[in-house]
Length: 490
Ligand SMILES: [Zn+2]
Image 1 (cartoon, rainbow, N blue to C red):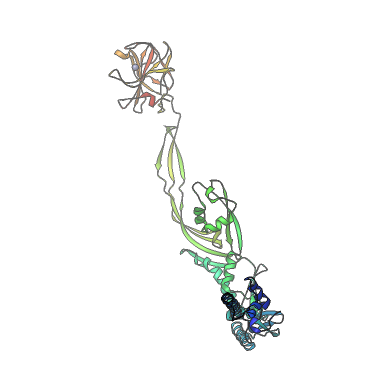
Image 2: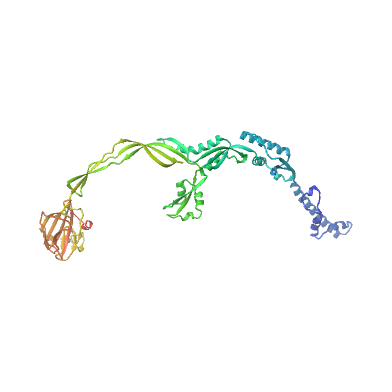
């Protein structure tokens, strides 16, 4: 049996439940009636126990009821625009007042009278305090459901509507804001000659629900980043998501999101990383006139000289770069250079042509090439340097008796004959500060003063002079100083 008392509204407490609770304590309400007050001590104890339990039960009922009282619902009104519920307020007057205020606010904002085209309805209800609409919430709800149309200006780019703003002035402001950075970027030597938007721009008056009017800054942001272009970056040695993000001015998180299939800690050179680069919905084309100076490389003229060898050349006139002043027209799309056309080129300084004299005379084989080769084939049996406390001024190349000894480079024979411990020896002056010696020969084929070509057979291997076994003692002397021949031969 449900109590109709308002105190118990919404609760389902009943007497049966309370008595059921008491029975759990092996006691019944009728026991209380049966209690004989004039009875024994035991009966008194029973009475005391009954009273205590009764009090506990009463306190529990009161406590539960008290909680229910706090939760009591308030009389209120649900507010409807046609079938659309707008919110819940305590009085009709309060709702009407707020709706009136919102309408006035919108009217002044859009410069037009706002007419509510739906019926306002109220429905009586009971709600908890927390279910009453907040002031801000109710007003927002009125705004978005008011259904009234206002005049706005839509911005269409290549037929796609990007947004609707309150006024034409706002749309113009947005377009100017998009152009702005590319007008500023021009350097001090550049003059902007032309600015245009490549896309087809259409601004049209349009009736739209109030809630569809965009905020100009939101529209600017959308135009700037509205579409994204995927670019690829190939990872180089030592790069990480952090350094790559820095290169492209991106956030590391965005980079990680675009490459969620990759472990950022396992990047290796050659990996391809996707870059989501925001791409503006509008392309601002600028035509700048730029002025700068440019170096002009000098030409080189060759003059032939038949008195000089083919491998000889010398600079007769040193070339000097020239300098030109350039006026160019440069087209940029959103700041990126697309094409450059030179309009005017003015010489500031003419370049000076370099004149190089090149010999044509055939180089005789007896002229030194500057490099040496081994005079005979064989193993080096004794190296250059200190040996048994004495200086060994050349290298010994072991070869069989009578093998050919060849000139290590072209030159003129400066000694040919017997020379003490060297035995039979040939010395060649190469004319470039170098002389070479070939000692312990068995036979000599050249005379002093004779020109010899590189590789020419000049003597035979022998064992003359201070020698133990058949070999060539080979020396390389540079400006009078003995060198280690192994550093020169190739
Ligand atoms: Zn030797």
